[in-house]
Image 1: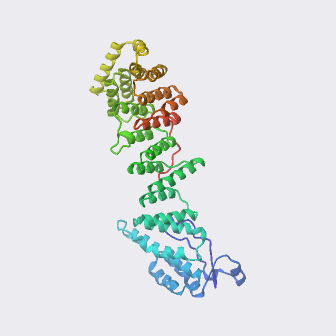
Image 2: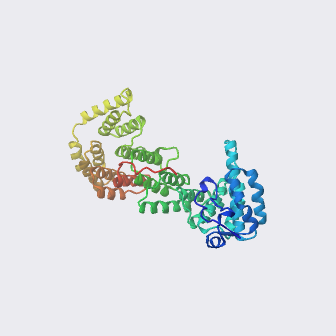
Image 3: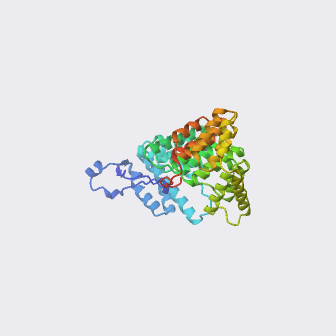
Length: 440
């Protein structure tokens, strides 16, 4: 028997080849060196032609390689022979696919021809343990592409257990589990991966969070969807991600929640705090909403901000008219001191709550906090709404602990979800994007 080098079978499955490197029979200088060299021991019929087969494959000449590989498959008797036969067949079939794709890039490729040699490689006793994970992964890809998701999930799981890793393998593993019907298992795997990566100081690509959100939301898993939204903005606390998350939470066609106008105001406030107001339409909806609720101060501030940002064009007659109305109302109302005095003397907290809203609209957070607390102590108000706004005022004033306590007192959805998003903003704000990472 002759010796076959074990140098290769490197991580080149992405290019579709085994990486097998066969030494020509003449490469061994003497019997002593041959015996000392690490590698496979092949029967004479296989060793005699194995190098020729690989050279023909490397030369992308399947017509020459095909009969030689078939000869090796017939002659293979030992475990090492069978391994080499399977590796060469795998390389040959990959080469045929590559040539077919080059000849007609638009034509569909039938990758199922790779299943048999891959199964042979996985069954071969001589397949190096270090390479089993790569073959299991490729076999899982074939099943996945054939929409055999439970089968693909099994192969991917085995590949991971065998030590296989790649840039987006964990995302693929989660996806295939979801498509195989194990949504909870797929999301749990993804969460474990994200947690481990963050603990190791690694940046997790945005695609992982987006997949978690879309998958949980698509299955109407509200708590899980919200949790993935919070993970996403925690990892990427920038204006774009905040905008995407808040819009998905409440304003998209398949949104997680369906808040009323009063609840929308607190989501608009979150978008504004994060510097994430998207466009003229939302600025105007926000301003009209708070104006109609008796808060011209916030309406005027929102419109001025939208105009200054350029998102509300100077030609917008609606915005100009609404701003004029808001300014007129502000002049008519004058100081809020009178409202504050009334609020503190009232038997319930309704005036205190509305006065707190007005102070919040003026960015006078200390006074807003005072009024909201008075409203809660007097009662007769929607405690969840007032606690949400108390939390907002505290958060905007920089009192993170106080804000989180107020948000933590909010119950019932969608208020609790809004409070949860605000809690996350309190923790991470809307700073620069996390380090860029390639999408999976």
